[in-house]
Length: 213
Image 1 (cartoon, rainbow, N blue to C red):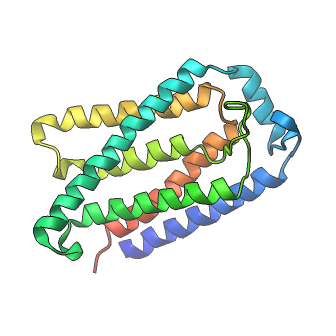
Image 2 (cartoon, rainbow, N blue to C red; image 1 turned 30 degrees about the horizontal axis):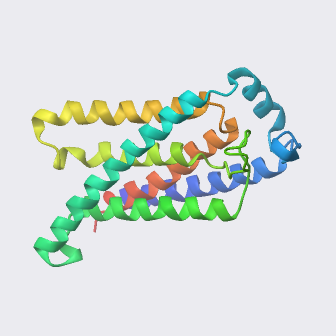
Image 3 (cartoon, rainbow, N blue to C red; image 1 turned 90 degrees about the vertical axis):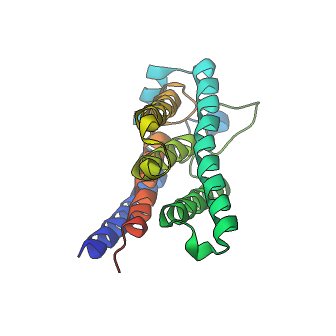
């Protein structure tokens, strides 16, 4: 019963993500971006950009925090590699590590997809270049990595360090999410897209993680 419920939630979130992407490409599309690039939800996005402005210091802070989030990925990757070497079989690696690996591959796939299929360009030029902006990849990385880690970390972190690991993970998530939102390097719809797609990927992660035979 739980398997069916989790699968249903994954399907619902996938459909919701698809609808949101369609709306971003079709609703209130105007050329308000750099070099007259078109942006959906133009009125809302433009108003938000005028509200927060651009802060490159916060942008750089989120870049550093994003690298620290990647350390979480690296740590679980090392754990998985050690288990694979010791146990000499991928099927003997912890289920949690396998599920994390699948999630990471899904994140990379989504990132590559939207680098090729551009939905929005950033509201500012980075090094005088247009860059794809949807979804916010840092938001997606932070949410997917942090939330998935919070679901499994107790198995791999010594009990006395549990609270430190949880606090650090939540802090990095908060810095990246809020920082990316107020730094002005993404449209508001890009941030929301990162949240929605992250939650969609996490429903698949959770479905596989909690799958009962």
